[in-house]
Length: 77
Image (cartoon, rainbow, N blue to C red; front, side):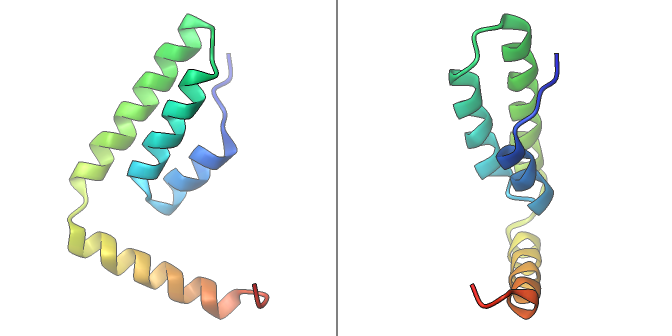
């Protein structure tokens, strides 16, 4: 059993925990295997727990920093 969703993992890496939790919910809807569903539920709960631990000011600061980095290194998109 390998639990893998590129979009959800990318959202987790960026620290967008609520969006990642929502994506894991979409993946859960597409899954029929019970053991995989349990793993997805645990992963989603982890995302929700992480979203509570970060203060809004810190989140805003980190997102602003990431946005500026992306603008600096973008290819004009």
